[in-house]
Image (cartoon, rainbow, N blue to C red; front, top):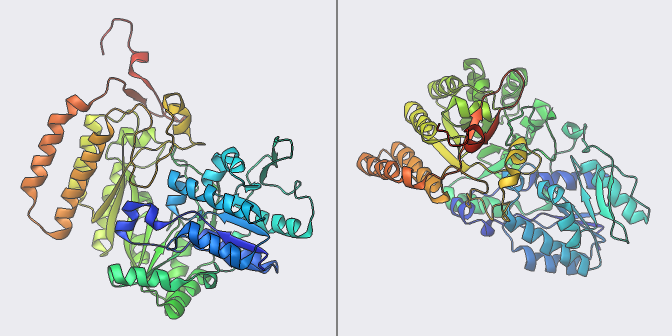
Length: 495
């Protein structure tokens, strides 16, 4: 019998886009929680759903382990968990029902669980953990195993026997000691599944690590129900040692740093570059970083420590759109970062976001112009996605219909009153990929690219919707706001 059975809800086969990419990573957030529980001297097992059938595997694991507590602990470091996908919600709630049927107390944690707590409680979850929940989880499990009342533990959401909803503590819990925690408990999952998947698909094994937690910036579309704007950084020596262990014990040949933001602290990066050499742990790695942090000296340290690929949240080539997002980034920062990375031999990749309210045809063309001028090595293209707790969500909430979450990472449905149709944005996405892929492969596809953009230009007037938003740029510290176009137009007047 096991005291605690940990799991999560992400299953690669439920996400066709990610399945095609075949780049699975271990659930670090779940494994950090397992490490915390193990330190508290309770018996812990992990059922990893990423590459195993969630329901059949969970049923078998419940029969074998007969746990007292089942914990659905989502990976807070996985961007897919932060997207609050409907496929993951469905899987999590199915797992909760299985746990209840097996007689276990069911606990859940994650962005979606926090945003839609009542839905999860109705599905059989007994307690929702909010915020940075490793310590909360440990306290709760100790109380449950000891038969004690856990209602005074901060960071819980639950319902009493009368069906009344309760929340303990007024603010999200912060684990201020996270940076001192032991490494994630990778020994509790089968890492060979990941290694085999990677080597079969790509010829090398990439493993994931986090050097930090959280992000101190305040882009107004970015949901942060777990860490808010708090930021913690692990000691550089600990991170380098973890890379060494992944290299020596698991055969890792590449690292994906799952941090929301890397290279925030230049002094830390300098230490890291020294420690990876000390531990013989210089491994090619990729990161996410802000363009305005990628000064020439920072890029040199990245290259020295093994970085070979940087993904930047560029979002748009329009300064007006960036300002409206509270991005606090200048288009010129992107151009400079691209130049520095290219000179250092590091791939420069852009995350682009289409459809932010107020973005029109001119702004879309500015994004295309930036892509063409800087020629990134790769791009990821998404659609503006309003999630609860963000300024963006509050602004468009009145426009949202019944569907408020994407099914999977390739859904890209515009869920508010967008300037264009879903299909138009998808066509632009496809055209951008076609153009960039042509540069990457060296193929002569200029004629095909030109024809596709000609088609888009023809479609644009027909696909444009009547409802538009007008951006009002920030003034001082105030956030940008936007209004429906008709709200700024006098009755019977023209714009």
